[in-house]
Length: 104
Image 1: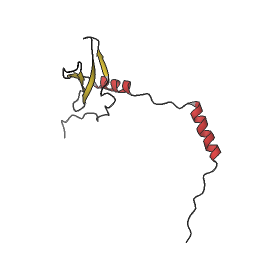
Image 2: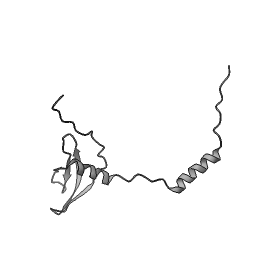
Image 3: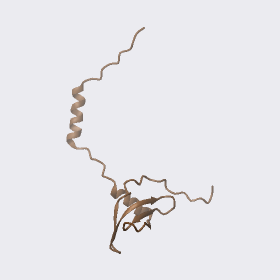
Image 4: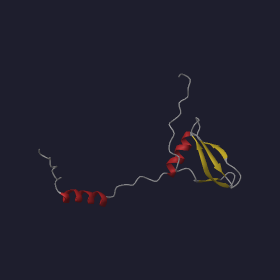
């Protein structure tokens, strides 16, 4: 297997599909309609105008990862109140009940 190029494993691109993109150089806006991760360079398929088909847009791996990171929601940060209420619930519940074993 020498000589084969190993690509990074595919990632979930569901958040990218349907995402709007703006091309400021050409003054146009479009939507991502597909993603190809089967090559060394990730490719987006963008439909710039309805009925015109889609255009192949190559990205660097870094650009692709930045785009994915930008469209993911941030992880929820635990609040002080949530941590406090969990601690209160643990102390109010008391000790864990003992499991009964059936005797024969």
